Length: 345
Image 1 (cartoon, one colour):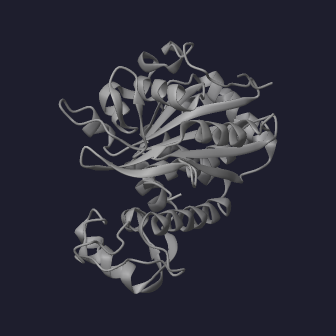
Image 2: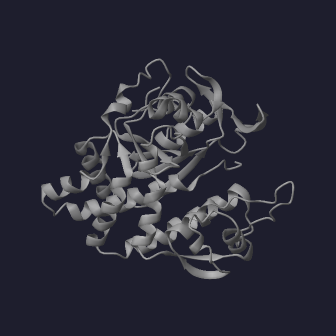
């Protein structure tokens, strides 16, 4: 039992978690017949981080919700690769924040995107944008901030970086996408595609490599006030954050289609690519338990949600920055209903 849009900036790094969860889950199915040491061998590739375990964060002073049959994991997408994050003086920024939910009670997989521009109270630091919590105090402060403002308890965390997205796309031979003229022009004229030699995309259907797919997912240009860029629209006519969210969904769908057609052996190869790019405080036994639970569910469908909800925030300029100021009671209620499927009394 449970205890007591303007779609914001959904950055693409977070979306790789959708793929990671499904790939690892499918690979876990093939692991069922494998020797125990093979399973442990794959998990050894993870970067385990017990120093920052979320179970060391005291959230008892906040009104939080939990359920023993519903596991919530905090997912963080980092905007620097592992080497850069280990460099002294490198800025720590959470490029995306999500809550992944393994709902064994209702046999569902869910993911909630937390918009980085939400203006919330960060314990000990006053009110700021949500993504500032990670910069100020790392994963622990980010978790405490989410618990305080949205009332969700977490079992642990996982952090991934850009490298995993690029490497997985390349490992499957690229993904198919259909670009509009404005998308192709934008990608070839900006630095969204990190490596210049790949800024040669065209209008229409084509196969994008990892760098091109990442750039495609990052496009967020609408028509700027100074008209520096014209509107960059999807085939369905969406621009700005709405267009970016649609591009991300299209790439994820294309990637999953490819992955599902691969053999279990290839899935395990992808796991070996992904895991070195992931840092977590979860232990091996918990990870294996969660993976087996996903396999037993027999579903790869992901229910998606985002905060703040439509009509649940106001756009405000605070200290010169564009912020989304959420109606906390309304957003907490909506999030609790999505995660725990608890109806309002």
